[in-house]
Length: 180
Image (tube, rainbow, N blue to C red; front, top):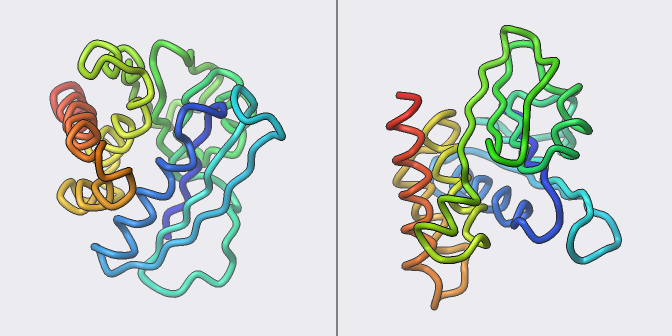
């Protein structure tokens, strides 16, 4: 079983990121997945997270008991959720928005400037979440590249599929180039 928390603030696409990873696992990798989400009452700017559990057998308890993988897209999210990261877990973070601190030396950390890559490569920061999906796929192996790409194309509006697939590829390539 893999317990994954994706965290950030409203407007970063945290929930879509979690849904896409869960979809890739459940529909294309013959696994089970569950998603729960939490967010503040504000539409944008408040803390939010998506909790994804992936397992080869049925998931009987759909809530995280800890995080094997923590994705942090804001400093506030990192501070709030890093204490639940397991000692041998992985931290995936937006390197220009999060400065990891106080982690056990056994935690593997992988940073990507996803917002800048989205702005420079696609002209809009809103693609940050799909860049993160590609990066997560590359550095954690939680879902395979092809399956994650299929899930992206099924998770976004049809008129944005091409740009979102480019965003996925940018994140995946960054992960392979810098952390392979």
